[in-house]
Length: 276
Image 1 (tube, rainbow, N blue to C red):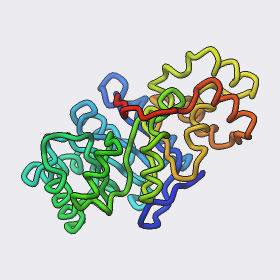
Image 2: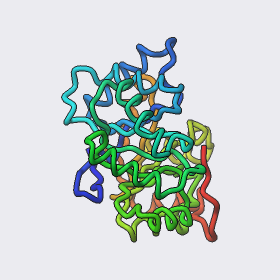
Image 3: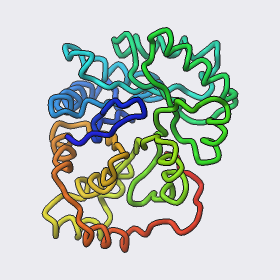
Image 4: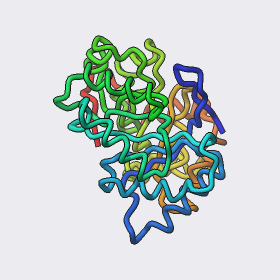
């Protein structure tokens, strides 16, 4: 396993597990098995949110982690922006903890920007941290100007910005990722294979075949090519989890990276941060 170091020195897996669109009763057993396989392989960073299935994904994660030593896991959840207030955030955090079957979150994120003032959200995150409900806090889907405001509002202890980042979504490379590096905040990349759409790209398929890997593995290896970027792909089946895990063995040399740059050019100007 590769690891990414957080601002407080904690090391977390560079390859984690996402849970968007997970938790339906129909697929629950298969998804729980997939999450358990990932944990067994060392993909102990698990990302979820109260928004995912209105809590169903958190319940799915809670079932998957039963029997696993809590200290071996790194659980991340996110709060709706309308719930990021002084009054609502403690309540929804407690609800997430209950669904997950745990006493604390390793990381709690503001899912995206809403109308609640940043300063109020930060103050409440700090209170939850002081109470032992969360170990760390951060944000998701905030662009560079938003991050500037977040810091100005007192958010210097932000752990990460979870953003949409993959071969077809390279916009953050122009300004956001450099800004985050300057402030020692690693990136958590969601939808690292564009919710599967990237896997249908003919050019990527051809290059992956030439390298004897799958398009998903190539896309994941590219996202994790830097030591400060984590990837949290969703995998609903054990076989998919194993495929993702094998991406850690791929070494991308300069020739391969140059080819990927030709196929998926880096941004040459500011692009508004995309959100899925």
